[in-house]
Image (cartoon, rainbow, N blue to C red; front, top):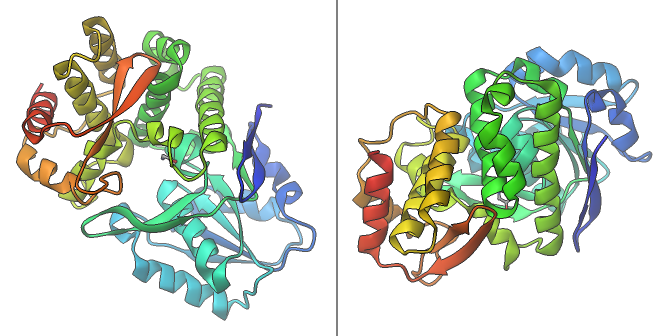
Length: 358
Ligand code: GLY
């Protein structure tokens, strides 16, 4: 069972990748914990609620339902959660359990970070995207109409319990969208992982249990290393944003309803790869391989109708823009990236146009 230690100033904790870890959930709840508040969606609860309830045996808990969807990841839902917690008798000894995809773990984490100025959270991600990215590393938050995660905090969990068995019910589109975040990890830091994903797409897409577990473990290892080196994204952690600069703009431009996060990131990785090529930073063969690999996990919902000028304009309200300068994470080879700022808008526009209209 791969266990990855995340070591941060706020808290050290384990991200455990293990089939059936849900059955051991009680081991990760502190002995003197107060009431548990499970933040989830009705569809996740219908599929996996009974299993979680069974293994919480004896613990006092209340389930709080969030309507789901990126468009609902807003402050108003946070208020609903806080109301639900208060009504359920929450106090500072309470523990929030984020039980769902990345939207749920982001929102549950932020609710925990702010309720009575902070209570503990245990993350149990149920989608691949949340297992390999969102639930690990303590980023929590909600969206504004202008952009993603513009309000939030770093709030590290007690642990992240990553159970690949929970993915058996995941719709194929969601599974593929999560795999784009695994591909991201390969491109930014691990050529061997990238090569594995590039050469074994059929096996991975057919949900081979061993390969699924190995791919998740590889991505979580990278995430744990990066977050442990730079919890608050002052430096190294920025590499995890590869594909997210344009990806977030695409999500905001389409009101968070047309693309899954991983799909928008895939388009964003294609745009960043094109930009790296235009800046002569990336060898042609690597750019070709990145496009080929992303394509193997497609098809992506088309993005050719999006106006590149509007996407460029949106980059200004991204968190990664500092003093008006957009920061891009650009590949210089598979397994290596650089943070580049001060790229001319014309060139960004060109890269987005070429990437979205293949
Ligand atoms: N999803 C990027 C990060 O956690 O830093």
